[in-house]
Amino acid sequence: MSDNNQLELASMTIIANSGDSRSFAFQALEEAKQGNFEEADRLMKESAKSGNLAHKAQTDLLIAEANGEKVEINVLLIHSQDHLMTSMLASELIREMIEMYKDKERSRKE
Image (tube, rainbow, N blue to C red; front, side, top):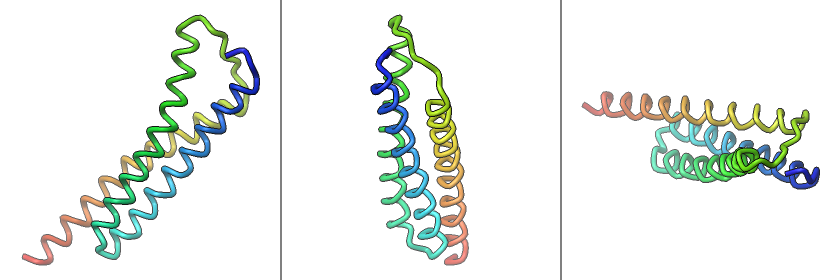
């Protein structure tokens, strides 16, 4: 992974897909607030797809380093890791919040 362009591409892939994942998750939360749970679930699936793409790019970097390739640490790579971890945390919390909205709706109907 000594090629700077490859590292930049991997970092940008992580940033872009993490951002998409986070955006889908927050859109899902807004839908859940309105009681649109099917749409919220669909958006969370989209969030997961984007998150998986970001995670794969990160895993590829880890595999390269495990195979003895030098992965240069730079600010862009660190920034990409921040985006990935933030989006993962947001998605996990939003998934739980959506379940809370679903429980609230079920209780209201009983």
